Every structure is written in structure tokens, then in C-alpha cells.
Length: 368
Image 1: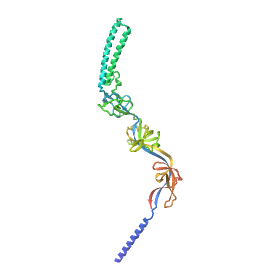
Image 2: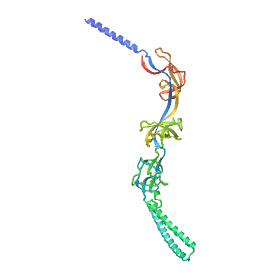
Image 3: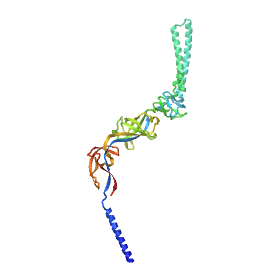
Image 4: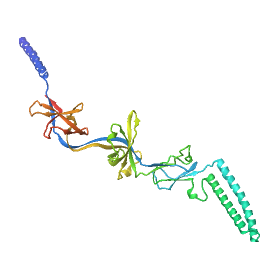
């Protein structure tokens, strides 16, 4: 019995040894990969670039006061529609003491002059009525009296403007009423009641009361890298996608390309402006929305093409691998080709001996 188990043990050892040897021998053989086969086809290929930017109104107008003072009332809010001439805010004037004193003094001087001319006119009129004074003298003194009255009215009007900012002869055109200079939508009202404001002058741009823009005339403002700017030109069509508006695909046309680059983190970029076509979606857009613009740089229609993955690039040359026959293992010939437009998935073949029946080497699908 012991002899039987010894023989069985030796048989098992020999079997394991032989199995291990066969396994190692099989795994030491060179494996022949099998590749998927790809046929050329006709496709429309577009090479595009995507520009990031935002939506802006073409013209954004800052409404500023024509007089310094304090905001006493704000009539509009952001989002309101205004027409040219509509009141946006009212200003309470805080007069300059020097100007106020000068205006008050002018009124007093005009009152004195008027009283003097009145006495002269009345005396001349009395003598003229009694035939003791000439008509020429009477008319001259009458004109001087009327002129003195006019100068007093003008002095009082100037005092009212300095003190109240309101002209007694033109209350509707008062500088205390801040009016919109354009028709559009109020984008922002950066002031509140009680805010001090100043008019624009040589040393100051003045306080902005409101920002108004025509929201029916919108543009896309974005950036393009210097490596692609020469591929763009004014008049090129583009498609605008706004992230905040689902399904947005708005047509646009490039209007302006900046002539000078700006440095952003060491990269030169150029500003691009594109006018948006008016449609139902643009009516929903708001100023400042982030957006992407897709521009077609190159396009080849019905181009003889192959998937990008089957092309091997070496320097300035490109090659594909053409199947020799149907025998296994697969064998391929390396064929030089000239490529054209590529979208990253498909590449155009401009010059090659290939046909639509040609079978090209693709990715490895398994190994034997």
C-alpha cells in the first residue's frame, strides 16, 4: 500500500512539472494582436474653436446730473423701461455760499437800478404829458425803465437757479430733474435717497445716477488666443450658447477683432465682438450672462475621411496601415497620406491611393 502511494506521489509531481513547463512554453510565444478594421467614408468635417465671454448691450449709457446736490427722490428701479426724457431722479440743491451771496447781491443792485429808472421814467412822463419834454427823451427813459425791470427778473431767476436749481421761467427744464438721455432698460441705479452727487467737470467724471441700455441690441464680447486670431475675420458667422438659458443657440456675426493683444496670465489674447441676431431667445437675455461662441475655422463638405485614431503622425508626415489580405495573422502595409481638415474625430484625406473599400488598421480588439 505504501508503495502505491509513493508511485502516485511521483506521478503527481511529474504531472505538475510537465504542466508548468507547457504553460511557460505557451506564454513565452509572441502574441499576435488582432485589430479592428476601419473603412474610409465621406463626411462633413468642421474645425471649430470655442471662445468664452459674456453678453453685453452694445451701448451702455451712464446718466449723470447737471448740478451738484443731494438725491431727494429716485423714480426708477433696475429693470424698468424708460424713454428719452423720462425722469429718473430728483436732486435737492445745496447752494455754494459764494455763488448764493453773489446772486443775492445782484438782485439788490437790480432793485436799486429799477427804482432809479422808475423815478426817472415817471418824471419824464409827467413832463412829456405837459408838453415840457420831447418824445425822444420820453421813449429813451421808458426803454431804460423796461430794461431795468428785465434785468431784475433775470437776477431773480439766477438766484432761484443757484438757491433751488430751478429756473422760474423754465421749471420743466430744471437741472434738479435727472432725465434719461436714451430709450432702454435701467440696468443699475447705484444711488439712494440722501446720496450726495456732483456734476461732471474738468476734475471729476461726475456721479452716475443710473445706467441705461437698449437690451434689444446685444453683442457677445469674448477672447481668442493669438494662435487662432489669424483664422478669424470680420463677418464670419458664429453660434452663441448661453449657459443660463437652456437650449440656447443664437446666431451671431463677428463685427470687430481687437488690433492689439492683452496679456492674461502670460498669454496674449485678442478681444472679439459679435452682434447677436434678434430672435425669441435674445429677448430673455440679461446683461452679463456668461456665454460661449463657437466659430467654424475650416470646413470640408463630403470629404473623403477616416477616423483620426487610425492615422499615425511622424513629423510633418502622416501614415495609415492598409490590410494586405484576409489571412491570419493580420498583415498591414504602411501607406503615406496627406491630411486636410480635422475635427479631432475625423480627418480629411486629400491625397491617397485608398478607396472606400480599403480596410485600415484601427484599435486592438483582442490578443491571441
